Length: 174
Image (tube, rainbow, N blue to C red; front, side):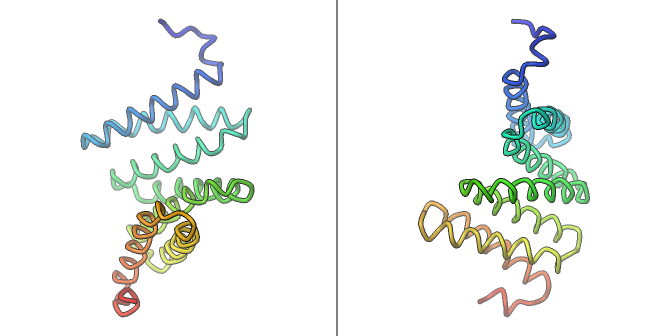
């Protein structure tokens, strides 16, 4: 069916549209076409920003879209923009984690991305704090849920890489 103008104000339709744009973006990225992925992700973020204005419960969706946007920017070498949206996503996840512990793994993953983006900009010292925090969160999560061990391994790998890049190889071997 055709989209009518009333659909463009329907929050359920808009959320579904943002989800479809996200899926499209992911497929373009998987095909090695990040330049084509970016507009779809940007549109998904714009829609989700609109939805959050009237329904703050949509903040987690916005944070996820921002994570995807950061990844797209990073893939395109637009590292400063990747850093900015990752910082925004971390802020949203921090707020959500205060009342919803189920988003802590998302927070940890986004902190890992943030550390990577700092590192890619040559800001290795600043990369350490988010990388350490990602490890700390995932250590706690893995103690009660073994399925989180893969995420912990990823976070430890990122932290080790940060130490290694800083020439602190001894610390990365601990």
